[in-house]
Image (cartoon, rainbow, N blue to C red; front, side, top):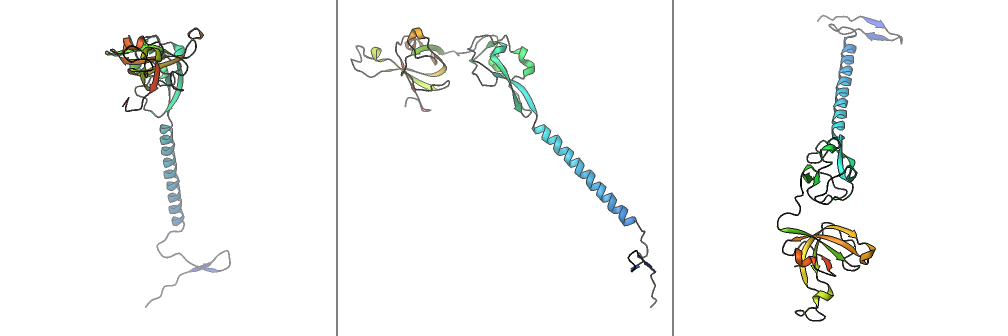
Length: 230
């Protein structure tokens, strides 16, 4: 069997190293490694760029309008009634962007606008659509102690006749206050000093109960649970 001899060369360390196997080209392996390294760096750069683009997309902010102070239904919306805030994300459908402020200022509040709430396009129009048919807004003067502390907009309450009105011929003296209506609180404000303190509470009640609630002299308000008066 023939034996082929491989030439050897002395390297810088003074030792003998075997010559490269037949068919190999010196430096080719190094070039392949370099190509792989650059390809890996390119892929990493592309992935990093895509990550930055995705991150920017999720951190997109849009300036929108928020109600700054209460506006009653039927009142004209003024620029001072609104302020600006920023929302993250691109889905801001329904709310009014700051760029469209001229489209809502000067129009009428269709429903009461509550401070701190995002302004939506369907809350403004040409005329008030509140209260709806079959309902009435009634403002009642409540003395100190006539309503629970922290009475807030949106709470459902039972409206009770005051002690003087409850003690009529049908109920007799000493009778407990009778239920006049149930309603939803839509506004609460402090009463003027001329009325002896307390608060003025605006209630949304059914139209049939409106006249009965409007004549109450010293009403009592009781906050109801989700199940109503029971």
